[in-house]
Image 1: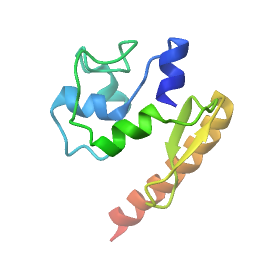
Image 2: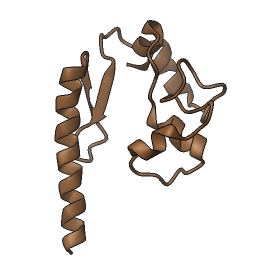
Image 3: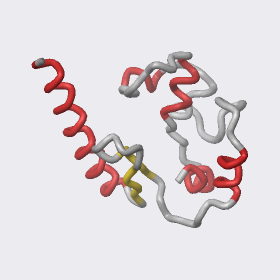
Image 4: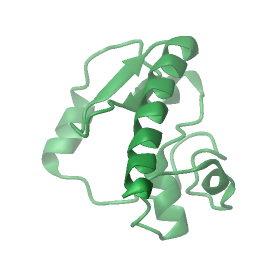
Length: 116
């Protein structure tokens, strides 16, 4: 997905780069207010790769990137189940559908916790 974005000149819009830029690694959910944080590492503001790494990747991670499968995906959002898996999409309309499902799910969890 990120390789496809790089290839087409899209912004990466990677949440981990916002956490890194803000030095707030405890953030669980990146909100709209976080996206405007001024930093060369904020890939919501800048096209291309950040000016340096935001972590030290494992050899397994490097191999996964070097051997990444060819896809047409350019969007992804977490699946609404804490599985750590994501739903990938090749167009914005499909992505919005997945994002809405996730937002409704996470908002319902937050409401349930507030009631307790």
